[in-house]
Length: 128
Length: 184
Image (cartoon, rainbow over all chains, first blue to last red; front, top):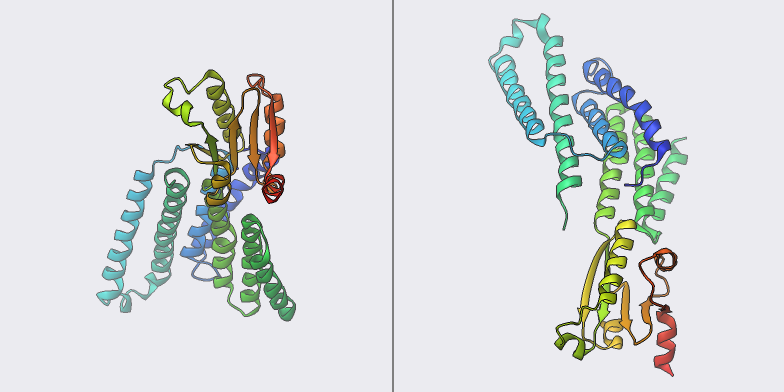
């Protein structure tokens, strides 16, 4: 995989932004069409894998990614507790689709961060 | 359409089990994931199909391939005579040069060289240990023993012929011939 194939580099470099846009679309339309936070997050994580295939350089700060993931988890718990567990969803019914969108975005962020961490951790650190 | 895909799934899984090289098995599993995500789509579960296609055939395949890449260790046994070990100058210039050349070859092939200096007899190493190459030094040439199915051998020969720093004559012995000698 360390042999740089020119064909692979060019093709992946071209496809790269489309995968990202597709992931964002999947997350933001998750509540009305197939897809959702988890799937969209996984698609966005594959962008980082493409980046590794194009240019295996370690310039992603795993510490920062981990921090973002933890923050996303905190917000997921807080939002669910604050909106559903308190019974506010019965009064603010107009807010329900927005709640789903926000939840999907947070879950997508968390899944993308988590898969990126798994992949980079595995590729750069884990050896014998 | 559904039946065809299910038959394809069975064929792919048998192929993944029966293939000899692990790399092929990983690729078969990736195609299997893609086919099974199509089956999920036919069963009206597009969400599961997307998740299976993304995770099963992209991320898992690449992780497996990276793992295969990482765990390639090329074991080289260097057979020494007892007098060579007692002598403090047993690392002659030629030996260092040979070891250096071999390490260069391994990094070029993305293998990890593990060089073991051994006092054991050749037959002992052949039967007891997992080896890729065994090197034995004679007075005027070097013998390189290898298993006859070792697919790196042609590349190694090409590399040694084109390596300017490596000037000593050598001969490559494939293991099957050795077994013949022992049998006689």
